[in-house]
View (cartoon, rainbow, N blue to C red):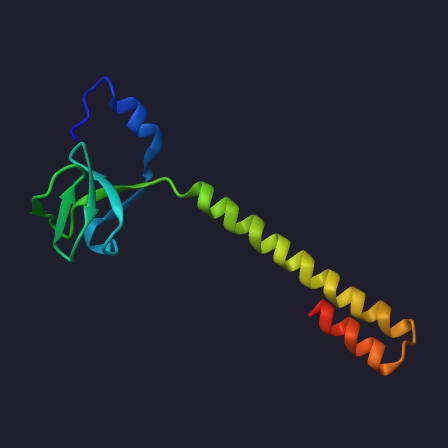
Length: 115
């Protein structure tokens, strides 16, 4: 699909030049913007335009724009923060349980649940 001057501003909101790379640095399967079309890398030197079956050789040095991945990075950062918080809560809970002086079997049962 080729983008006209009228639709290009909407596309440029999604595909940012900030995430620009050389074609050779992409992994097969990655989507990118090049020559006003959205492409998918199919092999080290080939790509197919969205909506077209024919593949085309793309120079490894061609500068391509990647889709903005800020949302994925933000989600991953939030996920990591939750995991760190839960691990810290688990450690603090185990320390507090030791202070309760529970019977060994009770302590092990609760510890198993928290692990």
